[in-house]
Amino acid sequence: MRILVGIKRVVDFAVKIRVKADKTGVELKNVRMSLNPFCEIAVEEALRLREKKVAKEVVVVMVGPEKCKETIRTALAMGADRAIHVKTEMSTDQDLQPLAVAKVLSSMVEKEKPEIVLLGKQAIDSDFSQTGQILAGILGWPQATFASKITVSDDKSRATVSREVDGGGQTLDISLPAVITCDLRLNEPRYATLPNIMKAKRKKIEELSLDELGIDTKPRLNILEVVDPPTRKSGVKVESVSELVDKLRNEASVI
Image (tube, rainbow, N blue to C red; front, side, top):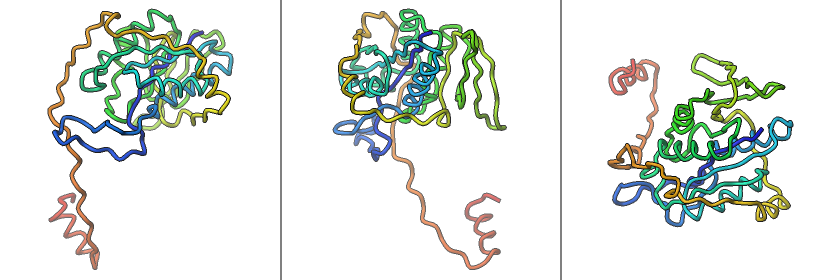
């Protein structure tokens, strides 16, 4: 069994986001970038399935500019066997939107013939949470989103996926091949060791051009403006319960 993992390069979660002066997007110049945390969880789960002898090979795929190679090496250092880099200078989310990314991944599925495609449930920059669902629709495959536990049957024909929903927990039984998106509670990603970091430099990264895939990447959404969230008003102290109730009713209008 082969597992294909889609990954994305995003602004590091510890960086304070700054909006561009022209409000066309987020400032990315001289900003630390890293592997999307949910994608990291997806890579970790693929590696664990390989360690359980469920899969024989883990292949990661990323769409983006030349600078993405550093992020790809992170996934390889974690233990992925090889990588595919679909190169493009299109800006992620603004020009290259989830539909286009799903089409690219669909093309990679046709090329690699995996039994499972793992993705993070969302990217922490755009928060679209759409790519996995669109990919499953394009492929006509079963899908299980927001997975918190994945178990593959002994004959590798089905998977049982536990997921969190608003009403509690839900367990799905799906046939393979399938698309599964990974939630925060699925696992805790491993740290890449120094020997594995050195080995990652020798692992194969296959390069493809987005243009040569012949995919329609025309954006369907236009971002009109990006602004900072409103500043939170400072709190006040009240002297009594009646004063609190009065403010909640007359100022906050929540009761």
